[in-house]
Amino acid sequence: MSTIEINVHGSGNAIRPAERAILSLSAQSGRLSTAAEASAVVTATANAIREKIVPYCPQDEETGRTLPGAPIAHYSMSTMDTTSGRELAAEEKYTTYYTARAAFDIKFQDFGVLNKLATEFSAMQYVTISGVNWKLTDATMESIRGGARKRAAIDAVQRAWDYAEVFAGVTGGDAELKKRVRAVSVTEDHYYTQSSRPKLHYGKGERGTRTGREELQFAPEDVQLDVTVNAKFLVTV
Image (cartoon, one colour):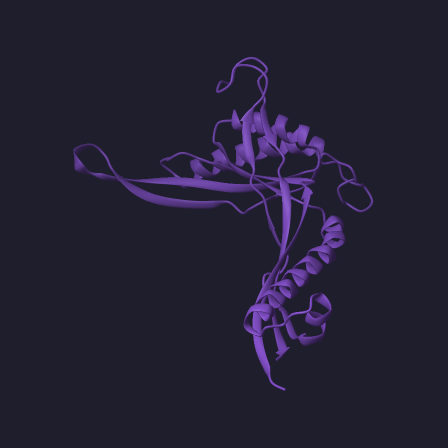
């Protein structure tokens, strides 16, 4: 009795509606004549951003943690980055300019507040919104990993069975396949990868303008958790 080796990968996933939104934006000065001026612009802008965030991110006075159920679960700001460059001015002389930048990541639990603040941020001078990422909570991630793993394992087994029927001539249905196709090693390849595709559209009012009470509307996407396994099977021939 001989054996042949079959190596396959299996893919599994779990899909859930997004529970959190991480808005990424930056406060960035234009080209200014001194580093101090550039820093001052970004400092003032960052303070204005924080003033809008704080009311939606109340803290527990004892622990210092954000209160459960707060519209904004967390926010962070990078250290300020100041850079310089040169540009050609009048009479073919070069002048030095300075810029400064600070980045924010803001995690929203309330998507209505996301729409409201994103609209306000987009109207602020020196503020640029770079995008939004949709996420699941840690609790949801833990609850769906097992199902994704099982789907990846079932996919790998089915692939091995398909190849065993063709290359090893295994017939007799599932019972015979279970008997003659044995897994001897399994490794996870892609470890719990989350993916989504955010969309941005305008809400009520005339699309494409910023007039009246128009508000940016971020449409939450489903978040997909992916698991991939590599498996080696031995088939009795």
